Length: 108
Image 1 (cartoon, one colour):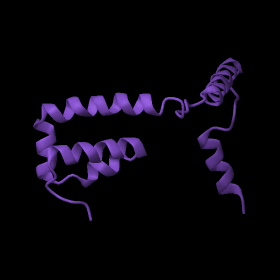
Image 2 (cartoon, rainbow, N blue to C red):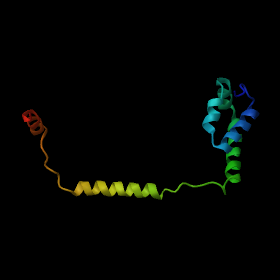
Image 3 (cartoon, helix red, strand yellow):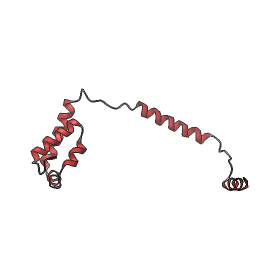
Image 4 (cartoon, rainbow, N blue to C red):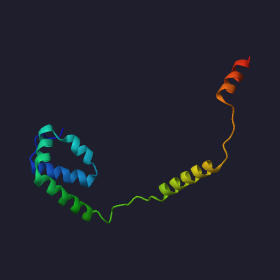
């Protein structure tokens, strides 16, 4: 179980570890109410988290993988093309709701 009522220094160490491991939500869930209030009011904590973010991004920059959005963009383009094609096609005249109801009642 996580230690409760950690000092600001201990919270910073835990935050840096969570940032490195990519589990910030787990860190946030581990905070007690008192710890949450303490870091919300601590200017030192927020300044130090910025330093931790910069150091983390510099330390792992070569290992970082940027997402490839080409597949996403091609799907968006295909969806747009499909919608444009549907907008240009003439509207189909199908059975009206009333005609469908009449056909269902006459079937035996």
